[in-house]
Length: 124
Image 1: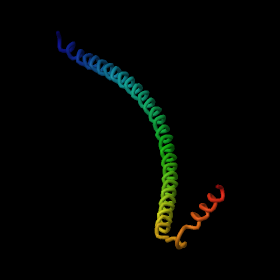
Image 2: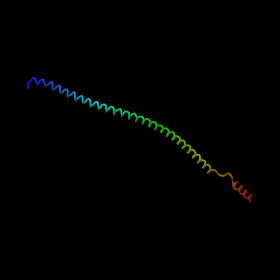
Image 3: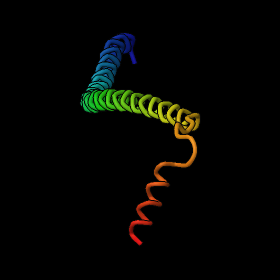
């Protein structure tokens, strides 16, 4: 081989290497583009799922707030009923004590007992 032929093949090898490199980069670009497309589809699906779940969470939170408000109303009504029952019980206990402490105002025999006895005698 002569020197001149050898020197002429060097640019040819450089051109082949550049073409191989460009081809490899094109393949890598194609692969990365496909991966990017798949990732974008996956992201869109995740965003849609996220939107649905956020809507469900918002509806659940609203339902919980409604239940908490209803529970607070019922607790308030129950507390008022309990206070009324305690007040009624205290009044009844006071009446019991008053009646226990009361002494008969009639001295001697009971007038009702005498009236019953007269009625029985009259029926004979």
